Length: 336
Image (cartoon, rainbow, N blue to C red):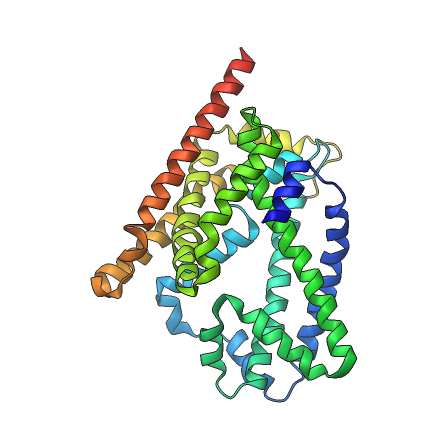
């Protein structure tokens, strides 16, 4: 986080160029790891677990909510990532191709990472299911070192060193991009970048500290923000884009970019944009109804969206409303 404060506050260039190389290295290394992992003795059980769906889980809304929240977080459509990234694009950039490429690349890397990690757990552990549940978000940091150890000798050590260096760059570039999302509205209302970076960085460290000290808090934050917050964020963004923006004008502008976009947007796009708002709402209501009304209040899910979770969401909403209103006032004043 301190590194992100320095990069975003001082506007340091060059890290993105290094990150591009590291992303390519990470992609290649992950593909090699996936191939190596599935050749290990016992990995076939992991492949079966990873690739064959269990139909009984499809009736549990938690499966869909976890999947939805993972997708909208990783791709970045529910928490402003695309807004900040869009501000960096050039007029000649092909928006549809960039969006399509982001989704495909993100999904491909995630799928390959699962292919490398899950079969490995089944190959090296006598209790793979317990290990997966116990590791939680830190699964990659437990499973992958085992895999590098299995390689043996200097080769395993160097491979692990290179992999986690590339992994760190991927994580860090994601961090300061996320940081930029918070900074941009503050910079738009006139706050110097260095002050905005320090203020938001210190707040992030303070608010995020409990998750570094406790897995319980990490799980709590993940549910409040990673599931509930993201679902509500997606619904809000879809509502604004679908019903408060002239989508037809935007579609024409995107299609008129020179050179012409690889994937032209037809009139079907206007309909899909409006339908988007329905998807998170349906899953969210289904999730709440299943766990509270069907499973019973004792299931405990209510603790995530009552105090203090709801307080956090309310405070965040007030801050967003204040910053957004100031930005709109500024832009309206500039227009006049």
